[in-house]
Length: 436
Image (cartoon, rainbow, N blue to C red):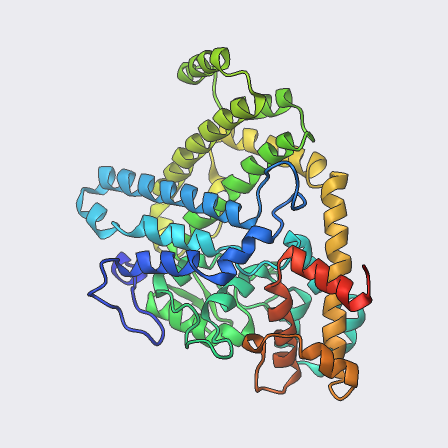
């Protein structure tokens, strides 16, 4: 694969405007950050409940921070590549920090309310709930989109689908940015693939994007492609942010004491990295606020991981560019940093993600999202009932379609619900049941 094609500025349905002071990829970034779907993420759960007295992350702040880390990774990679291959590559890769940060901004756009539990709720409705009776009414390739509903695939749909009354091509982002967004470049029906990035309704667009960037096709029949090299940077930025920042949020919520977080973050530094311990000692003498101390440690850990991740990208550069690298960069960290990260991951799984505060919001999501999905699916299945007509009238016109097949009508429901904020979903759930 070659950078000249990987960094394609081509778009669906709209031409590149050379008169714009911004380049194509800066326009991508701006389109995302000014969009309604991006703004709605401020009221979507990251891990901890919203709103609250403690300022913890929501999907929007998480995405902004991922974009910042992704930009740093990209710039560090370019610097190290230029040191190895000469300055010519720096001019060739001048825009990749903007592409990566734009993809980072968009990486969670497809997540339904209540975080990843919202995805699980939708899947469970069709897999083991009332929706399982629909399996015989749909072909396997469409059914797989429902029983393993995937926020990553929904993000690609949000960015590329022409919703009713909206312009062609969705946001009409460049092929380079769209390809960078794709972590799992294949559809849902493939065996032994837990996650995927493409609903079957977007397969044609997916192929245009990947072929437009001349990304290596690994299996034409199954529509499996290699990953865009920049997608590894986006993925690494997300991995770093949720692993480290979720721990900081847990500390702010009082779920984990300061000493434990301090020890976890300090464990990323070897004893011979004296600069860190000297700086920490000086800072702790002047700063007594525990949240500020943890913020210093968090920032220092992220900086180190950015440097380590960029080293991994450089060491695996040949395999990545040939389409033969198929793991996350973070899984190839040096043993020392990897051990520190795994300790954080294990602790978070046992003590943060399973904490009653988090479990309660997940259970709320199961009830609210599961209830709303069932309400609207039943309306789709019984369109002539008076209640169904009234209920379907609540769906905004932008999500509706003239297609009358079951799959398309179910997508209308899931487009509507996945675009809701947590607060809107809860309120609608209450309204439909006469609560309050």
